[in-house]
Structure formats: structure tokens, C-alpha cells
Image (tube, rainbow, N blue to C red; front, side):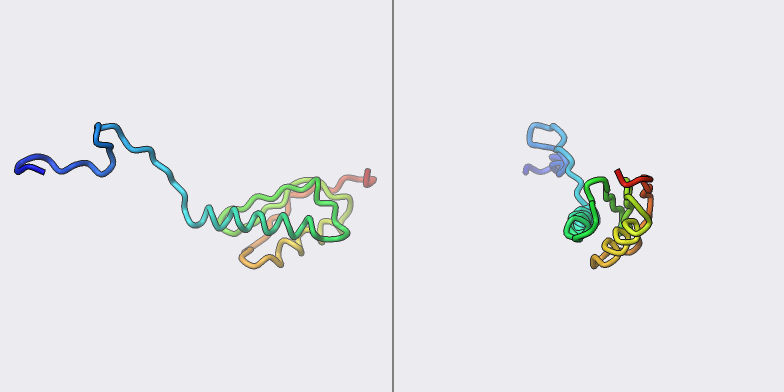
Length: 101
């Protein structure tokens, strides 16, 4: 670098183009890992049909959405999600499909 020349901008390439921004936070990675663990816990439960359930997580708070066939399935899903280490809270947004079909 020559004297009097401006310092290079760390956010730009040598050609002066802006560098692409990649934002990956530790919390997003932790939430994604937690989502996979909760999905596995639901899938591995021998009496729960988890095909109709979706899992979303934000800051360790799990939201379960979708359909279950009765109150018992709803309890099983909530309990399985709560048992995963790292889950802070489970929000129940599941619906009961009457008739079980």
C-alpha cells in the first residue's frame, strides 16, 4: 500500500464489487438441529402418526402444527417434543381430526 492511498475496504473485492453477505447465526443453526431432533422424536414414537405434523422452532421454542386424531396423540406429541434437550417451550397449534381417518 502506498502512502496516502486509502485503505482497502474489507467489504469489497479487489475489483471494487461488494462481497456477498452470508448470515448464519449460531441460534439459527441450533434451532435447525433442534428441529431435526424433535422431528426424530415424533417419528420414533411407536404409537404416534407424525406424518401430519410440522415442527418449527425459533429461539428454542417449538411450535407443533398439523393434525392429530385425538387428544391422546396431541399429548404424546407435546410430551415427546418437550423431552428433547434444548427445547424451552412447546406451542400447540395442532388440530384434532374427528373420526381418525
